[in-house]
Length: 132
Image 1: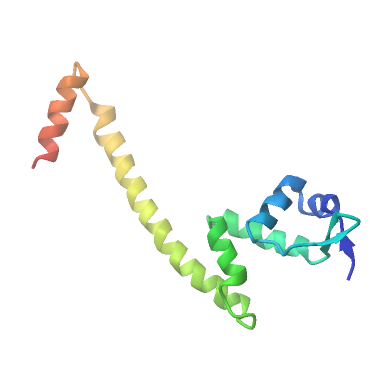
Image 2: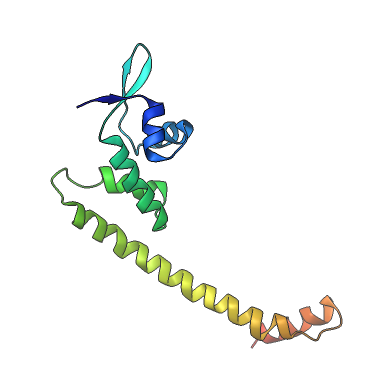
């Protein structure tokens, strides 16, 4: 198992060294060994960074990604970890979609069709609608 410098890890992962240090401080990467005061990472760290990237693209927060790595027993298969987190995230995404659809409806059916001459008049109409 080879040891990689932070620059080598960053190049392989397509990230800046500051991102590597951030992931380390956030608990997403194991604390690296030090050789002459410099960080040295195991050669499996780029694969872990690829997992982090996929999780971020799926909308997982840093805290949720940390759970993927540390919340489960070491012998828990990756599939079970992903399924547990994805089930929860999917419910959040579905709620976001419902909210976004409501926002779109308000914009299209309400605000884009507004004929109010002033914001005060608009405020009275909106107040009346929400008091029903």
